[in-house]
Length: 297
Ligand SMILES: CC(=O)SCCNC(=O)CCNC(=O)[C@H](O)C(C)(C)COP(=O)(O)OP(=O)(O)OC[C@H]1O[C@@H](n2cnc3c(N)ncnc32)[C@H](O)[C@@H]1OP(=O)(O)O
Ligand SMILES: O=C([O-])CC(=O)C(=O)O
Ligand SMILES: [Mg+2]
Image (cartoon, rainbow, N blue to C red; front, side):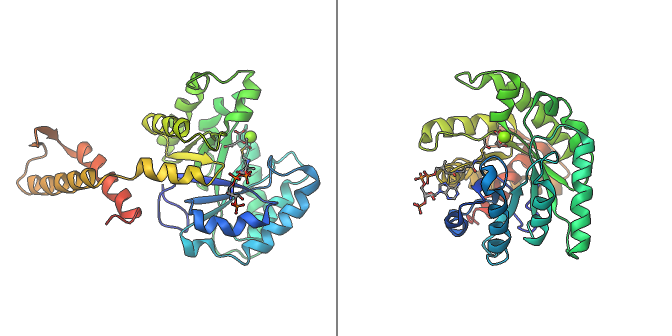
């Protein structure tokens, strides 16, 4: 799934507390695929209104899309006094995406979308703001398929691991084994519905080794990327996913060999001692596409 206005895939979404003005401009240098201004848990109750006003003011001034950065806002949930004003602010700030936290029922997500439509119409917004859902409770995880399928506006889903553990009354295990059920469930929901699937935040901002190990693991499970809390983590993800020159050359050669083979009427053939057919080549095409996005081609 590609970014809504920015034509590239999402690997990292950087949380930025919406009440920190100095961070808004710096984001341009960090180049996350998506910047996610947070009006929810990173902002204290006393600062909610000021953070929302700041967000609208700054986003009317900075054009992140020029820098190929998609904008997202994590709003406060529908049962809070901040919800409606947050949605209105997202429309006024022309964001690409809204992240709905703690999603638990289809009805609440549909009501959120109705509120969004109301403000889009009032403000004559010329496009539709897309939705990312975060599942952060046992109930949310169990209802994830039904909720994620309820609207075409939904382009991605995420696991909110901190709240999820609280709700589950679980604790962190050394390899995050307590998250396996939720992680694998959400990957299945996301892949069935062709949505992006994002993994939990990694809170230790200076632990590059631990972050790298966890990121490689969740990529192997099928996640698209990770919600991140620190700019360091963007560089780590880019390093991990960036194909090596050797991998890229291999992919290009295999694609050429496949095209040749198809011309000769053969769907399956041997390439450097390996059986190749359509799905094998498709995996290599992903590498070529990623290399293109990352400026290697
Ligand atoms: C469970 C949840 O709900 S998670 C989602 C909510 N949480 C968040 O939004 C937190 C996002 N992250 C942050 O706010 C910060 O990274 C913190 C508070 C954890 C640490 O911040 P700092 O103590 O400033 O970290 P550090 O000193 O390593 O920062 C280095 C530089 O990166 C900047 N920076 C750090 N995190 C971010 C960020 N998320 N976005 C933009 N810039 C950032 C800092 O402003 C600092 O810039 P400077 O050198 O110009 O002063
Ligand atoms: O949604 C996220 O990625 C972060 C979060 O709120 C949580 O872990 O509870
Ligand atoms: Mg949370």
